[in-house]
Length: 126
Image (cartoon, rainbow, N blue to C red):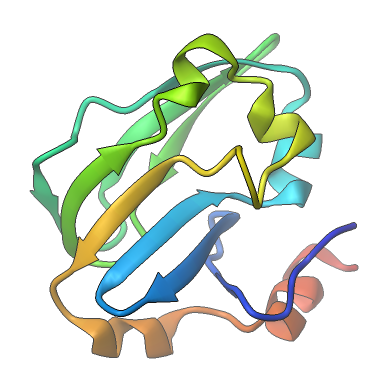
């Protein structure tokens, strides 16, 4: 199971990479493996400001649809358009080409509420 130590994680199985006030968000390797083959990623909240833990989109796999929860409060400034034609990138490269959104954070102190890689490993029993 790939759980990069430099990232932050949520109980909802999203990962977060912070660069300045921009957070890149995707789902973890664990989440994509639990979902199975991902066939569609929908994010219709670009240019919207949402609170942490609000739903920002959905990910659809062959047998299920899961909501995506925002890890931090802020404005969604970009959706990974590569996923429109290649949603399987979430399965093959969840921490690279499979990222989902970029978020302009409103309150960087919320990062303290996210889990470290070790805490996330404990959560999933890895």
